Length: 343
Image (cartoon, rainbow, N blue to C red; front, side, top):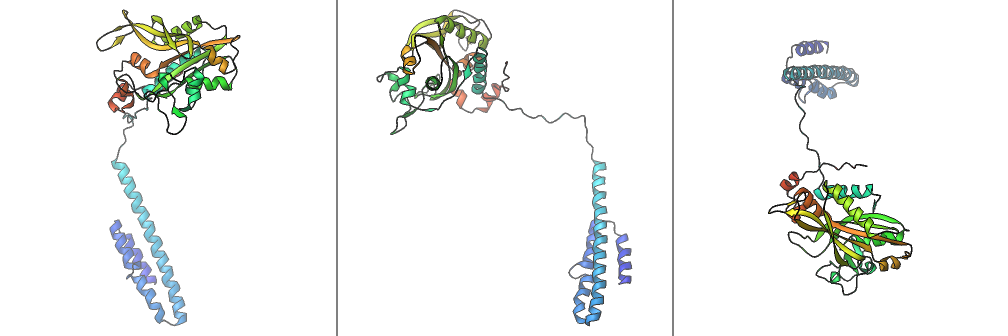
């Protein structure tokens, strides 16, 4: 075995490639290699000889495996070093461009509007999108025969008194029924009506504001609306209040903003035309009394606007349906970074 060990050492010292090393390994410890064949012959020996020969052969086998692994490790390191020497890294190259995520225009505009109202002291509240008849209609002083209750305008859920809310006013009812006056809240969220064209979609977004306190007047309402519109559009907006009717406010008004309606756009910095933008009014006493709010002490105002509508006006979007079409080109055009709150 001593001569075999010397022969192996001589052979492995002359190995220069991994392929040669593998051939050497097979010749010694492969299935038909020298050591493997000698192990097979042990069964023919006497017990004492078998023990002695077995120990020598196994010792040689361990030696061969250890030397082959050491040589293999040397080849691996040489390969890595050679590869590192042949490759270069230019640390001056610019980093790969990583696209930063953006907000959907609706999410961004909701954040914009909410931030303005929060600066005026309003808090955002939320409520269920699946509502009941009481919170969506009855509690808002909407009569049984009001057109808004009809199937052509409201999505009713079969065999229940449940429906998809048609406005976020239901959130105001829930908030007032669960809390105590005064209230200063906004209710942003999805609403649903059975309508679809270039200016209407079955699902859209509203933000409604409610302010209940002592000695609230139309003057407070006008100030709130004027402050919001000026800050949101970034210019001194000309506004006009027109008398209107809503079951849940009395008196009620629609708000128009001064503008110039051109062929392809609406310019808010010019005048000559008016465009309706929201509804508002003083909260109807019936609503407050039904919620056990003392109308001898408290009154208030409410207003509501469509998020998509004001977004289109501010950012020049042409078709309401584009908000929901998942058009990648359109979304790239109106690519809003996460909104940074100014408060």
